[in-house]
Image (cartoon, rainbow, N blue to C red; front, side, top):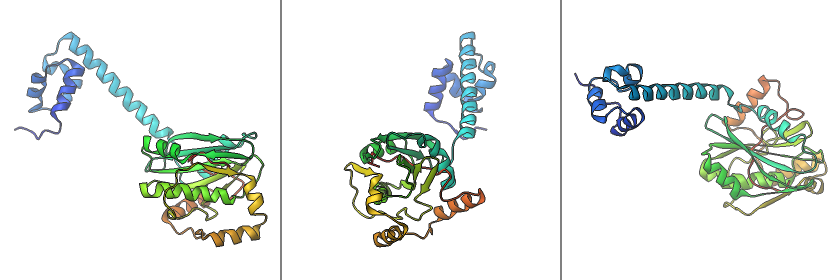
Length: 278
């Protein structure tokens, strides 16, 4: 009785190319058998020595690929909380004392890192972020979300108005593309701040996407937010959501608590977005 074909004509042609076994022979064998049996029992198709050698090489390639994929799965870095993101970015940014560096971690649908990129570097007090470059990278790797991060060489970890504004700009760009900005980590030495933990990650896009370069500077905070009272007033006036009511927020914070994470003083995760003057 003939079985339903779970393969395509192009599959058999590809197997022919790789093994040297004729298409007619593979097609005839596949009518009642799994054509992949040729890899385990090649003599069933009466192959010659050259074809047998090719089949052996193909088996080695497949075995090596499966082994590498298993290691890749084990070695993937996955962000399940703001503290895990910070623990990833702090070592990358804490030692940078002479310049501001803006980084982005591009994540897949399971929040595992696809790749991390330095998107810009500036001076000790500022850096420029280029949204178009971040957009290109995000589309190239087909990411589902991002964590952005940058350092404050001067040592202050409280987010500046510009830090929050650049986060909003990126959300304006990526939300319509269904790419989430999960967090923005600010690193100063071994300390960090997570905008998500602080409730400063906007939940929705606010304006039309603007791809102009963004300039950030650490001194922006000192000029605009000089103490906690003014800081809280700024947050309220700007209308940022401070309630972490999104499902992702709750999950990340729950994981943080279970790990003994703190809002500051640990290591938070970041995403590279564009060149931003930090």
